[in-house]
Structure formats: C-alpha cells, structure tokens
Length: 354
Image (cartoon, rainbow, N blue to C red; front, side):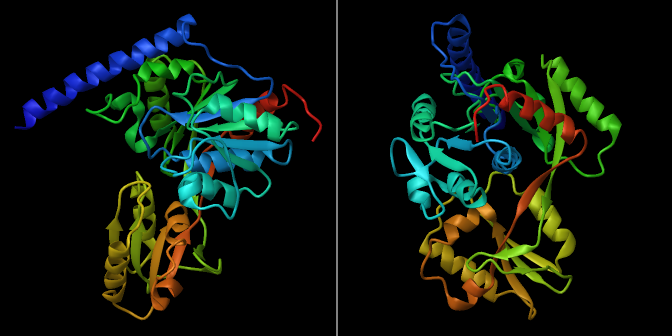
C-alpha cells in the first residue's frame, strides 16, 4: 500500500513541477511580465511550504531598516476574510489581516504593514498612500514573480534543507530547488548554536551544487522571557514549572526542544499552522491545563498563536491568567554586519528624504 501511494505522489509532484517550470520559463522569456518599481523591494521568501522562520526574519529586517528609512511590509494576508488592499494596524483582527501580518503590525510600530494578494497592486497602493516610503519588504513573495524584487532573500530550515526535499505533494517544495538561482541571498535558519564550520561548509556546498552563486548566511532563533498574552507582564520558566505548550505553527520542534530543556514537565497540544481555535479547543486546553501537576503551572504558546488566542473572549479566568507566549528573535551565527551592509547598500539605492 505504501509503494503505490508514493508512486502516485511522485507522479503528481512531476506534473506539479512541470506546471511550475513552464510558468517560470514564461517569466524568464518575458511572455509573462514582471513589474519593477522605483523604490527598493526586498523579497523574503522560501521554496519550502511553511516553517522556515519567515515572519521573525521579516520583523528582524524591518527593525534594522526603520532607523534608516521609511519601511512598508506587504504580505498576502493568508486566510484573512477581507479582500483587496488593507492597512494592518495594531488593532486589526486576524480575520481582517491574517495572523502573521497582525503580529508584524504589533511588533513593528515604526513600520507600516499592508496586505494584498495582488502584490503589484499592493506596492502601487503603498506608493500612493506612502509616497515617501523608502523600502518595501515583500513577505513570502518569492513565487510572486509578477513583482521584480531588487533583492531576493531565500530562507531554508536547517532541519529541512530545500536541497534534500521533493516537490509537492511528495515533499514540501513549492518549486524545483534550481529556483535558488533567482535568489541573491540564502539564509539557512534555525541552526543549532553548536554548529561547526565543517557542517556549515557542507550545507554551503549543497546549495552551490544546486546552482546558487550568491551569499549564504546562517541564523538561529533566540527566545526571550515569557510575556503574558493579555497584559504583557514578563516572567521566567524554572525547573519547578509545569507547562502546557500550545502550538499552531508549521515547525514547532525548536520551540519544543528549548522549553523541554528548561521546564520541569511539559504537555503538548499541537494544532495545524494558522489554526483558528474553537470553543471545543478551548475546553480541551482548559482540561489539559487543569490536569497539570504542581503549583507553578503555565500555558505557553507562540507569538503567532497568541494573536489568535487573544481574540477569544470567554477564556476561563484561571486559564487566562496562566496564558503566556514566548517571544522569538533572529540571531546571526556570524557575518551579520556583512548581511546588513548588503541590505543597507541596496535600500539606499533610491535615496528618499526620511
């Protein structure tokens, strides 16, 4: 039963790959047009479906650019209920904006966050709404070739390196790994801190073999003190803490490993990426929390899950008081100054008075 299923998935992936290759070829030949813009457009994307740490990297990039220029972030707004071009604010909802754009708007008070499925239209609207915008960060736009970005940053998860994956639906690749040739920079994400130069050299060789000729960087995720979902107060996790971990993200393993190393005990409830929590889920969460042992009991979730859970109004008081999220940020293993130099140089290509 397994081998026929794998053959079916392989056949479907070949058809999918052919369709993607034809589309890309049409763009390469100019049959399909790519629109360039007279301001810096930095695309942060991936060819793996989810789980590469894209949102923390977009936030990192916007935070580094905002002291130097006016930054706008443009996202598709995956699973949002609204349509067309929309300015996402701190007070938007996930149904209006999508969870990731809302999280970015809340983390980036000095940047403007927008959503539009049509990225060409979105950039045009940004230029009308913010004529002094100095740079646009295109969130998850690597496959959106209707926009000709001036800098393409491609992300790949250390644990699921794109050179070792297969096309959908057999694997998780949105397009063939040869697409790395379109990127200017590759960032290998979620790298273990104890990584050795021999290991990074091996990954670099793999990416070079796939046809990538640009610069390769390695980053890891670092975690801060817990923050309360509703009031923002901070606290630590100790070996006496019993945790209920709730995740609705594509690749939670680094978070699981981190919390498992510092907490006393941990129970997990895992949900799909971008999951919309229901009242039944809330009851399940409450029961799991009540079943935890010890006096120091907490519910911990991700920042992305927090923006969704925060919208549930009828959470039991004791559950609400115990609900925290773990902030995450990007840390370069090495050569961060070199990376930022490239970004600042490109973003300053079209100088605008800030």
